[in-house]
Length: 492
Image (cartoon, rainbow, N blue to C red; front, side, top):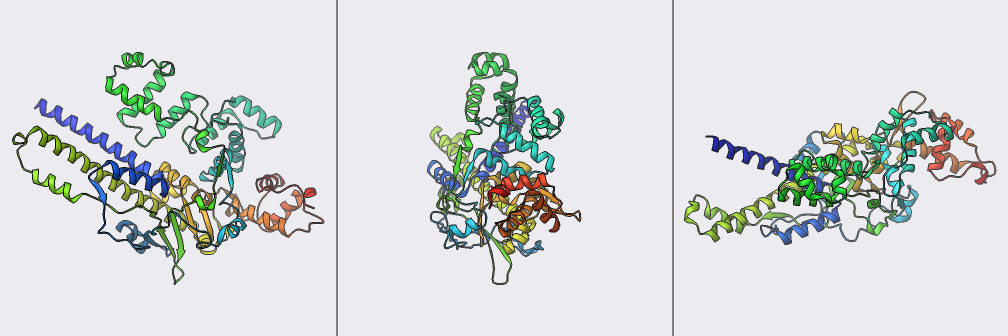
């Protein structure tokens, strides 16, 4: 009985580890944009003999979505969003003149496509993902500007507090800086805002989807208890101290190599995105009745299935006594069973990715319905990662991965999903509006001003107040600088 209990315990532990590995696979596939996903699928097809293209499944340019996604779209959608599955082969050559009016018209709507984005710009774009006050935004922008090129913060919080109070007249405290820094450390990629290499690596481990797995728990112990030995590559000392097996050491070494000591460098000094390089992951349009439609761009990804020949082969061995099999037959069955299970896991992960992306994008469309109907960015409402996570029931980190790496094609242009996240500002009547709405109105006011007598920031604040926005002159100055608009005397 004790022996059976021991075996059962081992089986339960193995199942838990497999579940963690499956969660990790789903997380990795969810984060991938469509072109990277195609490369991963192609690699999996080459490496796994039990995974094959399903030539019997013909997909139309707009095929039905998964059952769950379709049901939610048709029965529970008050906004009239119809959901479709895959948008055919848009992958290699998406031309602007065919979808949304070309680069010039997109530039008129804010220049999201084709712009050069620095490492700091990419971090500032993520500010809108979180519920922050205007005061907190000012501090987090200063923290971003204080990061080194590798994404680490080596300036002490005491020095940052002094600089904010003395040079920028922004009062703060150590506790507040710690709290806002913890928010910055939730930005992508994991490790941003760490104050040391050790903290940087720990942030990455704790942010990983399988952080509760035995392997990641051991890795966290290495980083916290054996960091000096790790830096000196003394794995023999680590092994003795933690009583690790050779297999444990080998796996931990692989995990350490996957960590990035310079998360800022992974974002690039300048990320140039041209229209030809962008493949949207979502297609949003309207049907003949004026309802919004959503389809996933499946690119060149083929439908997949588990090999029927391999399933048939395994089925032929079911019920046979393993003792009657030769060693080569047992090895062959075990190997093939492993390949089949891996193929099933990969297909399941792709389906989970599709459901997660559909769920996230539908929620964004519901929250920003007015924009998707009109293309008017002044109608964007405040929206954060927490808003989408609460509505979808997805984990905050999952919504972050989807929103930080995906693009959506609309009739008005192609946008990164993170563009739809924007922090809140208040109207004079107490209602909340998005900061982007204020910036768009500010741009309109400046475009319409008399160039012989351009408006000062005080005058711009007055104009915005007449539009109902509760803004001070200092706020106007900040938004004007963010828009790249010079002071009044240089606008003549």
